[in-house]
Length: 103
Image (tube, rainbow, N blue to C red; front, top):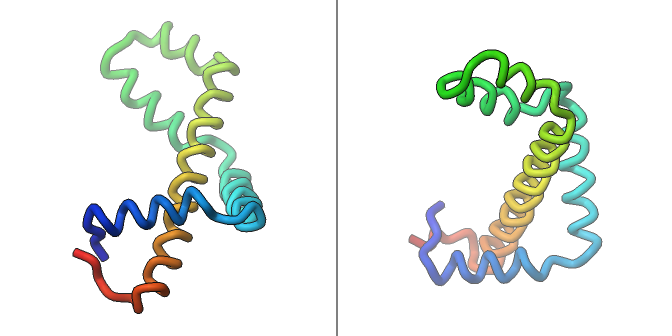
């Protein structure tokens, strides 16, 4: 399913106006998904990217930086919540418009 600009705007409006109970469910699901991973997958990708541009001592210090890891966790959680909200909104949109494709 591809969304045109009008459909995207409607989906975003739905996502922005989801009831608090739905947001709590989304947050709980995201937290459960994040708890399944011992290591944030973003940190592995970020470390691989950084090794192309920086030396090992700097990367080692980065690996030991708890503040950086917490920031990455927060970023990942926020991204997952945003995507999950939009996924719920797309389902609402599809149900509203009879599962038609809006290209």
